[in-house]
Length: 529
Image (cartoon, rainbow, N blue to C red; front, side, top):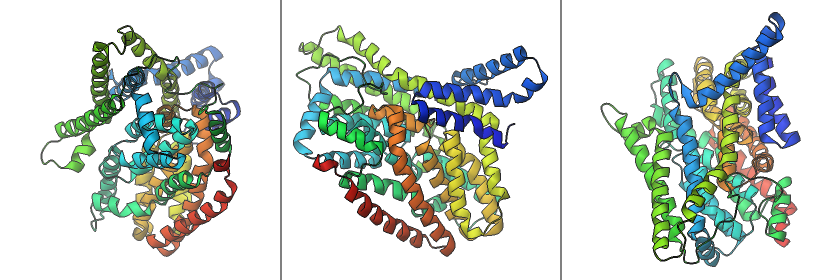
């Protein structure tokens, strides 16, 4: 049943379970079992139940094992990401113990006077850290959380702002892990279709204003911050935060939050938060440059460095450096008796425990993504594009929708890039080459949109983790904003496709965003609470 409509059953079932039960691990577990059953549906008809169940169990075990060991070697990408999360949890614990979070909150409270200012600062940080989406989500969360908590901004709102700036800014940044990956695919597409009027890099740069979802999603973050637009269940979270000071639902387990209150040093300063974060950033960026440089044979350029960088290893090295600096600051306070040595093992244990829920969800998500890949769900959806017979002017909007469905179903925007970009390039190059760049931009836009909406997406999980939000609360509160941004983008892509003019698409998006402000600003009264 691979590559057929039945391949859609597992992701749809998992997503419906998430929405109905709000129990992530249970829902992902059901999705995993259903994917394995669909993969071996023919065995259930021809073999005995025992043999079929054995094969299903082996398939799930193989997907789990592949997370840690692939082709007989350690799967460094996944393992390093998990280790980085553990390091981040420990860094967070020690920043709290040394009083860095408390001091930063007090410092920021004196300078950032309003909830709007705290949200705008978070949005700007999300744009400034454009190197990698994983790093963006976790780093921005660590810096912003003390400030947004002080201003009674719900963690769900923080998670939305992180998620809606991290992937969108990375997908249009040529000097990022995303940009390097996309440019390498574009280069292959241009070479395959003998297109020589622009290079892969110049094509990528020209596509930036054509990515209407990025423009819409990032604009909406600033609109939501400035005009306090709270849609759907976001209003409930924001009202609770303002009225009670509870930035999370106390009855739900959140990702990346310390499970127990740790002693906090009264002598901590802002540097006890900023120095570990700066060390984390410096260590990660330096490691990305170094690993990229080492992987290049011949002429070296910044673009080539980021194209060849080892992101997961760089995150691990940056995390180790950040943790080292954090422990040094802890021992400096130990010397003046601000903290006790017994807090060292306790901080490590509590930091690790804080990240375990996120790690469990991430592992389950990786398993279901592996099984969905075996089911060729993405290939089936991509085939719908090739079989469609429609006006070529509507191809960008169709590619946006299909890419969005694929990323939503598979939980991976990068996987969608890899499948959909070559297919889109081949279709457009043979029909109307003038729409090549808008079509490829639509694929990128749709992939980010689908990734935003998918509860099994690793970037969605890490945005919840960075914000310290309950995962499903983040998914459900972000969904209305992402759907509205997608709707605005769809109208923009229709205008772009019909006219072939990028400026027309941007103007349409701008007008609709103004309409969004006018309509929803009138309905948002949380500021008056």
